[in-house]
Length: 441
Ligand code: 5AD
Ligand code: SF4
Image (cartoon, rainbow, N blue to C red; front, side, top):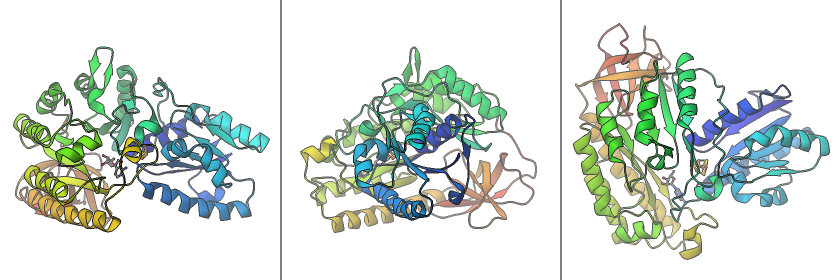
């Protein structure tokens, strides 16, 4: 059977799709890159905001038309939206034949066969306290970058967030399995790995904490850069800061989700830190790791966010001067604590206005922070052709800033010293200093 797999949502979902491809590599399935050739279409879905659900509903409309032409087509939903809505999806959308949540992928081959053979609908939505897929090593197209999941699930229960319900309890994957995956990637030519988890600072497997895990991955020859996402600002492990400061392979970039700047909103979000604590942590990070770059996530229009509370978020963003920020409108998620406890009382127009304001503020800040690099020399890992102009290469510096480099004679996968000659809010433009690629390892 030919399987077409489409991925929505975050990097963890991208990683999970790689797991699914591997799990389906059992002789009876073959992946196809074209929807029209498919016997089975799988959508690996996201549930983080309603817009993620809406995209899938739109896609299902298209698949319904396809299925009218080919009634034998099997349509399956995987991932967070599948886990979130479960049976309801099968009841409301007859086009869907099977639903499988993030902890059920090992049962997917059996499930697809059962649905095909019986013509019945299939549902696999049990969440597990143990499944880490530590014994499944994704087969992926070789590339400069790769994700490695080091944890699954989340126990934080931020009141706005659906993830604890869609990905279940937090569990850490054994370090040996993570290091083996990094080693295999290095052998295939990968230079940069990003360790993924919903809350990496609580990573622990027996005696190995997250800093120790990073240092173990850093021992893998051939892996030149290591990134991770995301830590939680509460209980930020200090040994992690020391490790980033002192190990050249650990990139000097931290994604530190702020979510809101007002103490009352932070408490209602159950973030368990105050504005002061967040600002103190930022100061400590900057004191420990000179030149570190910081990015963040912010939610606008959480229940009860009045003008003064929003102003507090603006003030924190102005004060911290993040290098970049992802800014979202609050989207109420069913069954979350916020949905049960608070009315979604900020008008849509006000949410939009606030998102626009924060994006404008951040654009200014990102532009001015990026312009400070003009004239300096940075090491850039070249990742591939630039989207705007295929003659240019796109890479990133240690701080995760995108750098466009005129491409002639340069190898993707090499790290080269580049002088920054121009900058905008999103990109730096660089000139290679030497023709010879230089490796950082
Ligand atoms: N509404 C809007 N944004 C959300 N996020 C998580 N849940 C919601 C929600 N219900 C944002 C947070 C998180 C990022 C991945 O998505 O900012 O850090
Ligand atoms: Fe990723 Fe969260 Fe979306 Fe799931 S709900 S795919 S964990 S962003």
